[in-house]
Length: 233
Ligand code: PEP
Image (cartoon, rainbow, N blue to C red; front, side, top):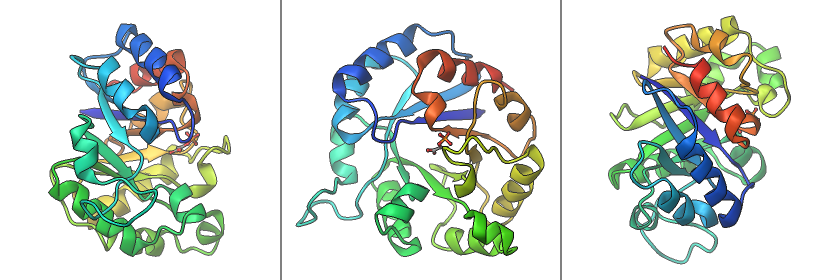
């Protein structure tokens, strides 16, 4: 089964999220693609409500490893579950780049979320400098070293140089990275980095690519639904 997840980043408050999700319910989505949206924390409740009774999953964008405590600004897996949230992203490169996320904290967040029963999309990927230095495989192996196989775990390969830049990895680059990841961890692997309706089919064609994590192009219902349709197996 192919999985297409839309990462909204810090876009769409509750009102806009509700409007989007009600439109997504009516959109032409293929039956053989699992569809997930990842709204900001404040829009999760509205999104869960607007998508109730559908197969479309709602994921958070992060989750803390403790159940509760003095961790200002953080949200726990138990709190997400109370809202009816199905899973969470962890370790997005923007969290690693701008908010001090490390491999160690990613490992703790993933473990706690899985233990609580959430599904997890854990993000890995090299920077442009790391790729140019020939370090891609080492970086991926290091980032994966904190993860263990789990039925509810999916990895997203997101080369940092391709996120929000319009530069997409060639299918060959994506395939090679996905095979490296799958050799370390036997879980489904999504590709992320400037996926659009017109490049989704080519990227999804390879059997090592199990779906996509989509940023910018997931913010518009028509473009997100078009990516889901282009990705059907
Ligand atoms: C992302 O944020 O996970 C992402 C892949 O963004 P974009 O599709 O905009 O490159």
